Image 1 (cartoon, protein in one colour):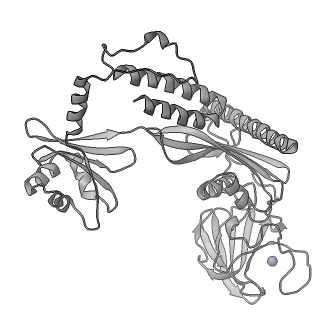
Image 2: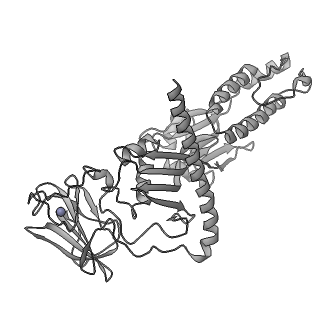
Image 3: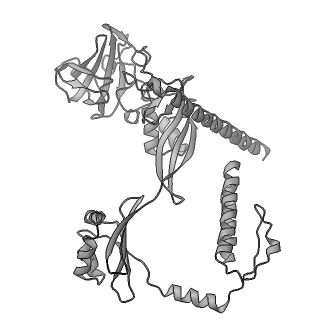
Length: 452
Ligand SMILES: [Zn+2]
């Protein structure tokens, strides 16, 4: 037993070495309590323990002699002879009857299990690859069944002493911890995101959060940087996945943007204005753009620079193009200059134009929502290579869609403001802390490099 305890100590010490100090202290103290609990709760009062050695201090290793007597040993042996749960993988085309048959259980038992309360219906939805655990009595009859039908919920069916079958559901709680990522862009936002340890989904989400302020397709530059706080979810101490990004900063060409997630699931500036705005900065996902840093302002066909009235997004043929804002299709057609094209009207003032599609996916008169796919990138009309030509007009005048001033975003509901500001301040502190820690780590890294 202490071999195990010691080993765990060593493993734990190596593990907590890499954690921030606050975590170290809390983990170490929790663990110390746990060790004490394990050592003492499992011992009989008469077991000989050198109590004088029990002034435990953090980070120390202790040897506690434990006397195992014959009685304990027999108890241990009889324990191992008890029936054990058997784990069964659900196969293609399986149902409870087939599984029970393979396990040598009777159709009668199948029937009783399936009638053990309404929760037992969960067993009808078993999917191949899932796990079922079955416990049998010593005489090989059914004793209990466990089916974890979700990461947090397990159905139990037990036979009680009166041979009655009962079902119950055990719910596990998800514990959330915060994770941090930070990066500076060298050649692409995607690469910097991967290098910072974010998952692909998190990188996409981050771009989504700032997609109304920053054109991730064409306006990202070397030196742009980001700082992200996100949730990590655990069940029984085991990592099960990532939750939402709860706070993020992005500096684009010197301009800083900050977003905080509120409990309504939306993102707001620290002042409480929605990040969501009436127009997306780019109508194409940045992941589809051929060259992040080299926007083609050169007209591909006319071979000369001309006062360009729009933005060209070079992307693979077939790349989906989104409506930049809610609006109405005022034109969807074909001509020899624009090829297949779609024009949208947004309220009174704004018109957006999307040109050189391979395929139009909307019709004239149709209403569209921001983000709806209205067509796919192509090279129809006067274009030598596939690209989206995008124009943005305010009161009939062409504007640069990536810099044009747009109506201010909706503020958060007044009733929510105080509560939001509390949360926002808390996350802003976390963002700043993270920045400081990273700065300190980077500087200690470079100084240790310098001294080598
Ligand atoms: Zn163009």
